Length: 353
Image (spheres, one colour):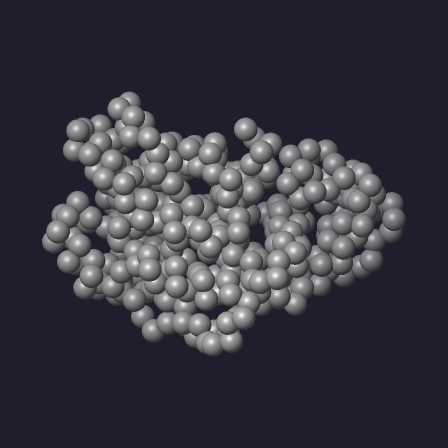
């Protein structure tokens, strides 16, 4: 029986034979990077594969509605569930068990890399394992609409929410420390942000009140990023072209210093890393075309180019993400993202350097 036939058998909640488990293990061992990432060896492999198969049977139906929304073939989704979503969730549970407090897992990824889908699926799998999980986005920490209007009056270059300087850092630190504290018995107010308010400029809404969570998924498009040496801007990549562009990039780079205390509560950071950062512009165009086709308003291709270029001018992925992967001890996993948004190779950071 082939690898995919075995996965399809698991969707029927059938038990696997020892031979079928061995087939799954040998398939796994062919991917050295992934085995290193999820600590799978020849000696411990059968036990890990058997546990994962059990979890697959228990969670597949629960996840079906979520991953049916993905524009991927069924067999591709089953393979992603088996080789990525399940082992990643199991690893997070194991990391949580080693701590005497809640785990704060950072997720760095730009638009279209699948942060929301990943968080949704991980939460469902961890729920099956008995863990309470909550997600919080860097977007939830935006300053209020009124505060951002004042910022724009001071610095007209802040035409969009998103770059460093547009977030309430102190609020984020307070919330993360409350979530991280195992002795905190008080309800925690999780800030939430509605991007549709004020004609798409967005504003803060009523917070979500929760009790303590076991695992916190904290995600954002520049989560964990640190300032880089300013000499990097001397020969900066497009669209940083003019002296004004370089000055904007330098000023935003300085603002990153204010975010370092916000990264401090993180236990680790996984990076969703597109094989080509230009994918994000194409993904945005696809998303806008789908909105327009459904009868909603959307940006033109020229507006999308200007929008994405603005963020690349503020924090260019070629400069900042490369620096993060080379220098940050916080990064533990790197997940390559394919052009169809699906996760590809998974690496431990130390293995790719």
